[in-house]
Length: 172
Image 1 (tube, rainbow, N blue to C red):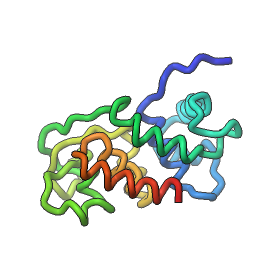
Image 2: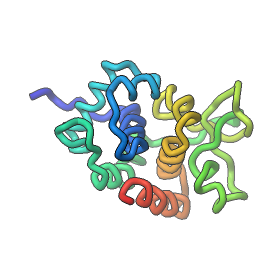
Image 3: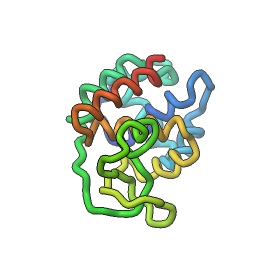
């Protein structure tokens, strides 16, 4: 059996993309193309996630409760993030849907995007550079990633709201 070398940030993007497919079947090449991550890295990521119990042994079925628990209790510790400089970008965390309706007057957090960024906010590093393009093309993925960022950088109230929204989207 292959040794587990620890989770990588792109594993989160891949897991959330699989969840965003819902019950729609997918191929590894679909993940690769849509996320801008090489096929070999997608395959390695799926293997890491399977070894960690985040994906079933069929390597297609997300273990939704385990993923939810990992995001809520592990993500802020495994992939912590400190907001950076003010940059133009795409809103994330509580600055993005669905939380932005609740937190209108807070500081803005963004994934840096100098070309298409419509707002200025504090920079949050994405899990993977390809996630920004993928999020623009998949509203469900965008919201899952933004909610995940709220867990990493939010205060208690933002984290609580993000956990509630993630529960609806991941566990149904």
